[in-house]
Length: 219
Image 1 (cartoon, rainbow, N blue to C red):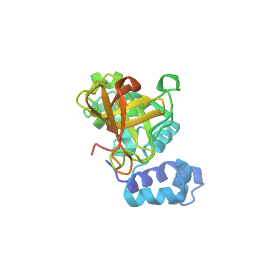
Image 2: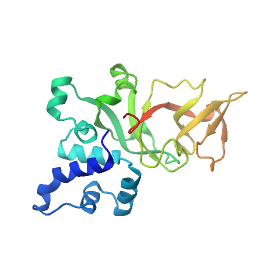
Image 3: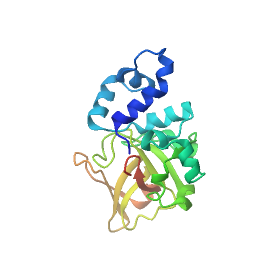
């Protein structure tokens, strides 16, 4: 996958005509992507790709996300696969530190998924079961961070062996690690040790689906 700096340079080339031949600076790209200059500088330092903003940018510019992330031209992708892989993306839903959103009641858009992600999501046959939402808060750091895009497989809702799931409780929508206990009780665990473990009865939670990956995990 291209580095943050390489992606920024690609975007500078794409938008250069919008700046009347003026040199395009990092602050200009931050504005184009809708990121504050402070957050932009932090992302650049950490080489953290702003996937949510890139998806929006590519949609507006009608550009393949594969080109931005991997340097693959649309022509090479058509020659290689003649396919574009799409999934449902709820870009206004945030989960992890709450939010209370209901996936069923939110608007949906479709976003292109890089071919490199298909295998880790379970293969092409699983794409119909995959949906994506945003992470909010720091309760699952370092596993997931604020504004990460995570992929959920709705068909994988068996939590007997534990794992990381998107769940809904009376307090909202969460991404949590869950562990079965005795007497129908479940531990709701945050990976961030600053958060305490919550224990609920199984009938107090609804499993939306298992978190199977996030943008950025495929090199």
